[in-house]
Amino acid sequence: MGLFSAHRLACEGVSVSVVDRNTAGRESSWAGGGIVSPLYPWRYSPAVTALAHWSQDFYPRLGEQLLAQTQIDPEVYVTGLYWFDLDDEAEALAWAQREGRSLRSVEVEAVSRAVPALAKGFGRAVQMADVANVRNPRLVKALRAALQQMPNVTLHEHCAVSGFIREGGRITGVHTAQGDMYADQVVLAAGAWSGELMKTLGIELPVVPVKGQMILYKCAEDFLPAIVLAKGRYAIPRRDGHILIGSTLEHAGFDKAPTDEALASLKASAIELLPALADAEVVGHWAGLRPGSPEGIPFIGPVPGHDGLWLNCGHYRNGLVLAPASCQLLVDLMLGREPIVDPAPYAPAGRLA
Picture 1 (cartoon, rainbow, N blue to C red):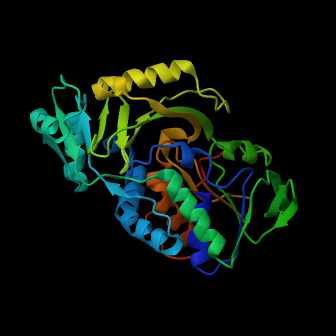
Picture 2: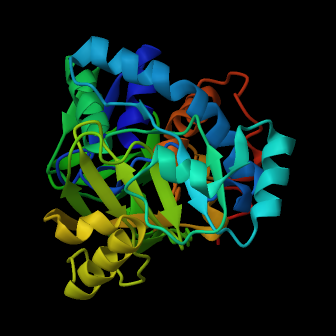
């Protein structure tokens, strides 16, 4: 959120400083799976759907732009997504018809032919053929590289923010480990840590860390041609044969340590989906912290009573898919333009204590 907000603002000619306590882009954006869709899009509110649809249509162009600018390919890879044995399949199909999305029922036998590695025993399947995944570590690496090329952007990394500079009723900057930094506007896009920073202003922002763990296999490039999802766990193929398996949902504060219990659970899910993975080696296991929020609806817009302070945070499980729309909406609001979607559902006003 921070990198892409900065990129959108910088493209409009705004001078931007990005301040990050670590290397920029190395938190949940790095750790996630990169599916360019909510896992179960029909289960979300229209507020999430509106941002997701705009972003899904934008992603192919974004990948091309970043590759041309940085020579780093985010690998926006259209594979489609299969769901199996959904309890709410009728609701999913009704949602797709209502929203004009390409989700449909398919015969399990046809899926088995298309995805030979898939386990047997599933009874029903639905498919959304146009779902992509993006290689999220490469996406944030490309965004960071793009910002480093722009003369109106400064990156301050390994520079923790401890609070805000307030003059009267206005936020005029931030206190950092490298000294105070002043700005006409401040955007808080600190992911799971956003709530902690808002507490320094006496504001309760309901954004909390929700831990997620994932594992990675390396297989043949043609092992898995599509994303598959059953019982809340998914397998995501990369172009080079890496297979991501995710993810856990844990309320463990800011603890990011991978655990043996999660590793065993994820391996079991992997084998349940794709039995051949029983003989494959796990080449990666990590954890990240999602910015959990009520109903997964992000906070985007100005903070009442604190002129100059803006939020773009709280995207929970859908940060990657919602980012382009969220950041474009933020820029539209900051520059006083007609917003791409109705901003009311995301406005901090009325949602903060």
